[in-house]
Length: 356
Ligand SMILES: NC(=O)c1ccc[n+]([C@@H]2O[C@H](COP(=O)([O-])OP(=O)(O)OC[C@H]3O[C@@H](n4cnc5c(N)ncnc54)[C@H](O)[C@@H]3O)[C@@H](O)[C@H]2O)c1
Image 1 (cartoon, rainbow, N blue to C red):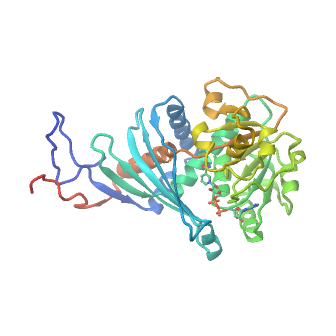
Image 2: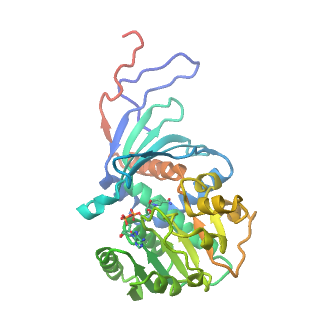
């Protein structure tokens, strides 16, 4: 991290502390730092998630700001702190305004603030919708890999809800070695389905790409199903659609009826985070009064504490952890600092002498 040219040494403690400089990082810079680095970012997500699973992080519950006058919208605060070698604190502040999409602008927008480990000073404010999509896709690719180890890898993938997140997840699967014979696409919006299909064709993503009108067809013809809708309540409740026991990445968290959850093997990224905010696993807990339907976390699988039974659908519901945003954000910051392209805001921290 660079330091403020008007460096002030805080002498209240025996250590000498300096006020960091404050940088603003644009979406264009974030994208440049992350593009084409899928393997590296999945590695980073895995290291960070292992730190979190080992308890070397602080990741309190996300705070949901909801609006009586705009019930479909929300802004979520995800504060977090990472230990290990990264040692950074911060907060993601991410809006979801689903009606934006019809107006031609993305649903989600976000900033990430990074705070200095030693002084607490914020030292960067960065565009975070790309970081958020990146860490979500990295986690999904990591989960697809871990949950298909020791068995045949799915070659038929179905994307259920195909906005920005679905595109990033496909990019991360492809960028980490997945290839598919068949890709299925299903979306309530014909425009979204056509747009995603166009993206897949341009990428040369599969021999066969099919847009399915029905949810049932999509699920029945996919061994790996990726949910990335914006559904607020379950809309898939037919157990027989899952009789071929697919691997389900339930990224949008609220698509599956509790009955499907209860008939499946369930893993989450973090139990306390995921069993909140009326996610499908939270509904299953409310229905049964127990968490017995949960097999464990992905961290348990990675550490060998949990095994993945066969013979049932496997549903992974990742709530999404602020520590992953921080880790990816810090990686981006370090890359840009290394290349000498940080846009530092001069004199951002100004009132630095206690008595003037
Ligand atoms: N778990 C995580 O870590 C995490 C992180 C980021 C985003 N998300 C979630 O991912 C989801 C997708 O985000 P996005 O930015 O791609 O959204 P988006 O608005 O760009 O796309 C969502 C798509 O889903 C479609 N859709 C909505 N309801 C549907 C339904 N019932 N059936 C079929 N299609 C439906 C919409 O038409 C749209 O094309 C959101 O729910 C978001 O909250 C999860």
